[in-house]
Image 1: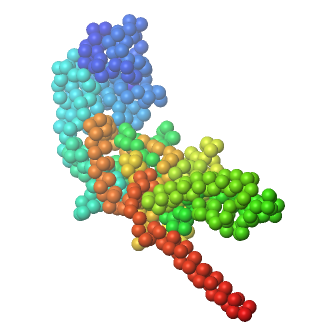
Image 2: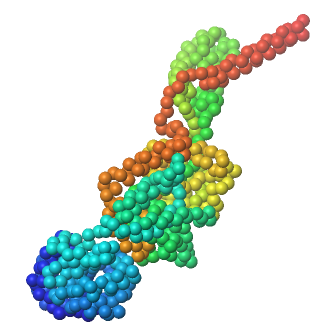
Image 3: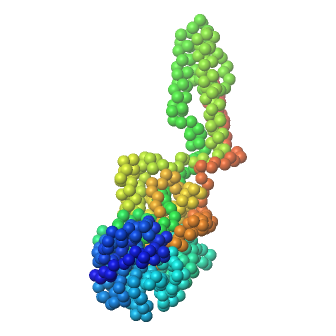
Length: 557
């Protein structure tokens, strides 16, 4: 396809390395030329310190490299129609065209424009007679350089070249707040457009049936903003998406990673405990059971001592009430006279004294803090809860099904049901959470229609993904966008934008106090009402008992 030129001498190769050795160190370079003597390769390796793939004609493996060095004889190379093939010209590749003869740029220029318009390739340099010329496509000419360390110099001004962008509003990356658009993705778009001087053409994507991000369906078609990029209706989708596509040969490209987000489960927030529930939860069920068994044993023991009447000692008038007084730490009117009964009585009193003290301390702690049921914070707890899980993210279910300890959780995921009926039937759903948001709060108010619901983020998130942007396969400025993203990451600008957007998140999501930070509060009658209820019930019962005693006394008379 590409005719090989005549052999190139060592001095000429040294001239090439004089310009490009720093750029090509350690990279893989496709060399389109005829295979020369062994000394030819030694000079290349010594000059460039790179791995070269030498081809005399174009083949399918040539596209694996990012750099091409093409040896031609003269301008007639561009007259061959067979070279205008997408297997050779790639938008993101860099091309160095080398000739020992003088190349006339006026003759070449129409063909260069054809390459740009057809393949969107602008990273082209000419090296002839030890003179380097670098293409500036938007300036309409080649520029001469005496010394250069790069095969391309980047484009700083595209002179209002149209940039077709597709986005959709999403908290917290792109949102409309107080009359203007903001968010990390929106600011990245604006800075990229400003730096390159694009004519920005933004289209907003709205689709209620499918996810805005889009995916590849079973039949091979694409949905969402991804479809806009794949079908050449947009150049870039500036909604940061997960870098989780296993396909190698995709009909689109990914940019460099620009962040990290988590996939987390969202569950209903645990309900606040009532005062009686707090009283019951002061001890565990096992402790309450032990106290009940101890109380029953005390009653039976006192009844046994009364029955045996050891040493003719006084009997315990009422074993039930006496045992209750011991358990509550109250004073007792009569004690057993025999030694065995007194030893048992003292040991029970000591044990119950410890129990009462611990109960008081635990109850005071729980009443003086904001207490609710235990939140679900691990995948194991979520699995044991048996709650229904709804999500449209199939890859989340597939990822959880791989591991044995989360396979049961994956079986509970329903991919067909949506979130519209949350108020009617509360369930678990999956959300993408920014890592900063996850570290700041875990409880918030979620809005379903016009109603707000208290929700909780399960702290153990099963998955996390790097974020990226989807760009068209022939988008020529991918390297420039990657360079900008790297600068933002290294300078901490992306982190600052995410921190700034949290102020809006606090307004939008209405975070609630987290159980992880309990604050003390003063007692009030609302905290102690059950004590007065017990007192009131006791007065009522005592009055009823007193009235019954008077009635029975009169009836006997």
